[in-house]
Every structure is written in C-alpha cells, then in structure tokens.
Image (cartoon, rainbow over all chains, first blue to last red; front, side, top):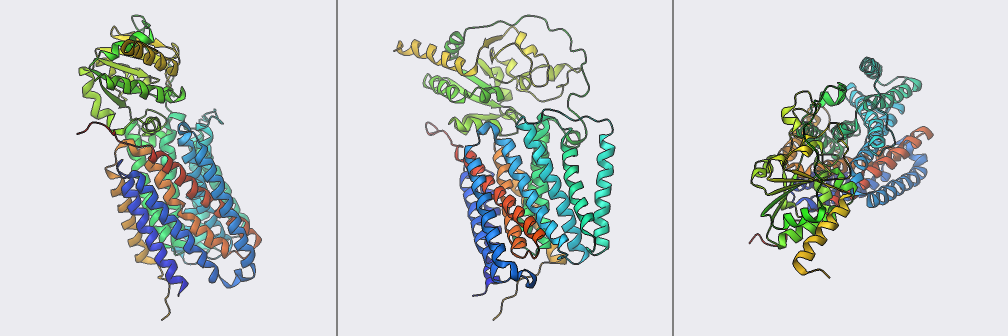
Amino acid sequence: MNAALIIDAAYFAAAFLFIYGLKRMSSPVTARSGIVVAGWGMVVAVLASFLYTLDVEEAAKPHLTTNIILAAVALTLGLGWAWWSGKKVAMTAMPQMVALYNGMGGGAAAAIAAIELFGHKTHGSVGLSLAVLGGLIGSVSLSGSLIAWAKLDGRINKTLRLSGLQAINGSLLVVLLGIGAYTVYLHGGVTMPVLGLFFALALVYGVMMTMPIGGADMPVVISLYNAFTGLAVGFEGYVLNNPALMIAGMVVGSAGTLLTLLMAKAMNRSVSNVLFSNFGATGDEEQGEIQGSMRPVDAGDAGINMRYASKVIIAPGYGLAVAQAQHKLYEFVKLLQDNDVDVKFAIHPVAGRMPGHMNVLLAEAGVPYDIIYDMEDINGEFKEADVAIVIGANDTVNPAARTNKSSPIYGMPILNVDQAKQVYVVKRGQGKGYSGVENELFFRDNTNMVYGDAQKVMVAMIQAVKSLDGGGH
Amino acid sequence: MEYATTVLTGFVALYIFMLAAFTGFEIIGRVPSILHTPLMSGSNFVHGIVVVGALWALLNASSTLQQAIGFFGVLLGAGNAAGGYVVTERMLEMFKPSDKKKG
C-alpha cells in the first residue's frame, strides 16, 4: 500500500467528519452526536499522520528516532494534561478554559510557521506570505487568549488604560507587517534574530491588544481569537500542503467570525467597539434619584405564592451559578410543575459569562432545554405572567436601559420582568450590578426583594411548598 | 501504480479556501443562541487538527531549535484538540429535552 494515498484518504475523511459534525452541533437535538462525529475525524487524521515517519525529508533522517520520541512525549503530555484539566473544570469556568485551549492551537500554528521560516523550508511568495501571516495571527491568538484566560480567571484584575495605547498598537502592527513583507521580499532569507524579533513582537502585540478590554466584553474577544486561530491553521495548512488543515482551519475561521458578530450583536456591542473602546469609560454621570424603597419578603411566602400562580417566569443570572443554586432551583421548578404551574426560563443573551453559558449551567442541573427561552421569544409573555422571579441577575432586568438616556446601560435590550403582576428578586444584599448602575426595578410597587444566598432561598421555598402540600415530614 | 500526493497551490488552494469559508458561514448561520458557547468550543476543537501539521513539522525537524519548537507545537496542538473535545462533549452531554408531557 502507498502511505501517501492512505494519508490523503484519511484527511478527506477527517474533513468530511468535521463539517458533518459541526453541522450536527448546530441543533440541540443532534449536538451531542456532532462532537463525537468530529472527534472520530480527529482520531483518523492523527493516526494517519504517523505514516509521515515512513517518508521524511533527507535532512531530518538522522534525527528521525529522536523526533519520533519527542512527538510521542509531546502528544502524551498535551493530551493527558488537557483531558485531565477539561474533565475537572467547573461549568462556571468554561469560558476561560475555551480561551486557554484556543490559545494553545494558535501557538501550535505559530510553531509550524516558525519551523518553516527558521528552516527556510518554504519557497514562493504565496507560501511565504501565508506562513508569515499565519505565524503573526497564531502568535497574537496565543498571547491574547492567555490574557483573556487570566482576566476571566481573576488572575489579572487590572484593565490597562493608556491614552496613547491605540497609537502604540498601530505602530506595532505596522512594524510587524513590515518585517513580514521584508521576509517575503527576501524569499525567506532573513536572519534568525529578525525572525525571532518578529515572533516576540507578535506575542507582545497580542498582550497589548487584549489588556485594555474589560471582563464583560471578553467572550467576544475569545470568539474572535477562536476565528484567528482557525485562519492561522488554514494558512499553515497551505504552507504544509495539508488539505485537512486548510479546510478545517478556514471553516472555523469563517464560522468563528460569524459567531463573533452574532455574540456582539446579542450584547448590543459592535466588534470594533469592543476592541477599541472601553465599556463604562464615560465616567460617573448623574443617574438621578430613584423614588421609593425596597420591600423585603420572606422566601417561604414567595414560594407559596408561586405555588398558587398559574404562570411563573424565571430570569436567572450568573449569581445563580456562583451560589451553585441551579439544582435546588430545578427541584423547586419540578415542585411547581407538579402543581400545574406553567414555568418557563427566560435567558438574556449575556446571562452568564458568554452567550449560551447560562443554558449550559441550567443544563448541568438537568433543566430540559424546551422550557428555556431566548429573550426575543419570551419578552412578550411577561405581561401574562403572575410571577417573574429574578435570581442572581441585575443589569439584564434594569428598566433604566429602556428609559434613562444618561444610564451607561441605556439601549441594551433587557428582559421585561417588570411587566409581570408580581416580581421577586432573589439577591444577597442591596448592592449594584456589574455595571455599577442602581436598579429601579427593585423599588417598584410590584417588586419584592428576597434577601439571602440563592441556594438557601431555594431550599426555604421548597420546604414551604412541601409543608403546605404534604404536611411536612 | 505509484500514487502522488495532490499538490494544492494557486487556484486549487483558493477554491478550497473559498468553499470552506462559505461552508463555515452556512453551518453557523441559523444556530440558536443557546448553543453559542458549545459551538464556539466545538469549532475550537476542530482547529485542533493543527496538531497534525505540528507532527509533520516535528518529524521533519533537522536542528535542535526546530526540534524544540516542534515539540512545543505538538504539545500545544494536542492540548487544543483533547481539551476542546472534552469540554465540548461535557457541555453537550447535558442538553436534554423534557422526558414527560409533549404528547
């Protein structure tokens, strides 16, 4: 048998399985099987790649044994570490973990570029251009993703705000493209220090680009770097004459770009806004006095009230997941459903830490996805709801976004919980939301506050309803 | 008969890039936002295929510097692929419809 034929056939199969797998992943019904299909594509491609050992370049032949050992060690370590870390990461920490794995992919693409350029293996201006570009994009994705990971993981709290930062970044990019063009012009014949400088500056650029971006915007940035890595992989695929890399990389490059735009749209932000300006940087403007007072209510009473309601809508936020109250919440929901209460979940696009994150957190607690609704689909239903209960959310339900033009969150779409007959807000204390804006919803006549840890509140509600129906134990 | 690897240059490469880009766009086009996080993670896994390219680069390394860079390339690429798979699978495994009513 011919090794090259097997490798090509394997890559064809992998490309098919990736695309088919991604297609299945785009619907909740088939999503699970989608990742498994794509996973088989990866297994096939990696196994076939071991046939490379039969036919290496002349210069590499004396090193083959060492290289095989190095490859085996690197594969084992990378696979083992990632498998272990992926299994143990908490669902709340998912966004930063995706960022970390994505950065690693960018780094791998940059490594391919470095070997090709350092070893003068690539010839022709198209190949060289793509090698350089892939190296640049991959390096930016590596260091940028690492910063994004560190920020979301709470390892970096500072948000760098230099007045001349945009100018510095702009000149840095010009220098990088200049060195790149020079490399292509000299047909790759540049010295090692110049190439070293190129990769070092590219890494610095990734850091400088990500440092000024605030935590709330980070999901958009992670998604953007995901698209970047895809592009870099596609370009290096051309350099290596590898169709699997070309197709998979470019599919992810374009899918990731579209996903980035969709996410930014859901958050009422534009991508350029995210990259080149700072949320809330406009400072402290007068927000006006809010009339009225907050009225607390007992958790048990609120629970019993919902037991006798006919329609309840739940608006969960990140605070729910932080308190690890999803499971207790779902237990309460099932109790309500047993009493023929119509219960629905309303998810704001930015609930959680990135679009879709709250769905993952609810799914973890076993909440079926067909009682979970997107904002646009459920916003019309709040006026028919007897009770709307807000748990661990704040800015996403603040009516000021609709009415108060001086508010930093003005214009952001919100959940219309204030239109329900009765609103309960479960909250730890009287503090403000992520954006630092006071929430007038809490002061409304139809709103009552349930103070306490979300998990304890849910337990109290469950007990109140149970003692009512079963007489208690 | 001897089989020779297809060489993908010039317009052939351009066609591949173009069709792949449209494919990616179409796949994501109508996806509900409840799947945004898993799908980003899933596409993150797919570009983990870069490990295959890094493997080739490492196996053809002919100097210590190339071996060192190649080693890191394979290490990072393997992490991307394996990590991307595990977290995506864990997330999607949890998505379930109601088992009662709907009848």
